[in-house]
Length: 228
Image (cartoon, rainbow, N blue to C red; front, side, top):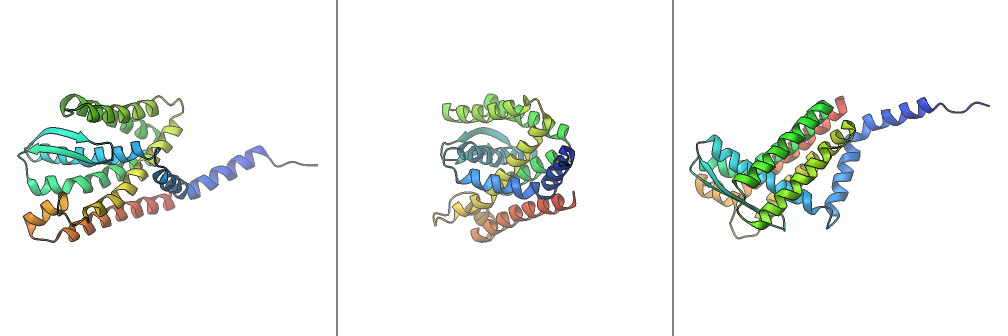
């Protein structure tokens, strides 16, 4: 009597993961988003990348970041001075999409790249605490996010860190898909309204642009996963 080889089972499992890992991680991200308590830190994460993108845009265009505020409900605010207003306003949602796409893309390229990028984000969070946080709630939220990335860096198997970073990237992208829709509240407040007043292009157009960017980023990662 012969028994299936353990190596064959391992190879089959590895082949299944390689074929469907993008969908497995995407499904996990969708499930996490539906869990009220579990999803909270990831909502904070997307909000942080949204606000820090405003801040980076301000710095790159000659402005300054005065403060970053994060709120328990996932909202945020980045107060800047100077810089190019159009780029700063557009960078929030577009930047969060770019962060999500980049985290997944770089983490997929190499396990050490995932580790290096996780360290980079941790350093960015610590800098935000020191230089731009001004209130206890923001400090607390930034500290929670910093601890999450510190724990991921300390994972003994870099392979697990790679998968976690990919999951984080997809969670940020899913939030980037849904977040612009919150601007459709009839109040004409926020980045879309600011861009509309600057360009005379209706707010809904900017919302569609941000949604399409996030959708394209997600599709781009899917195409890359199919080729690997």
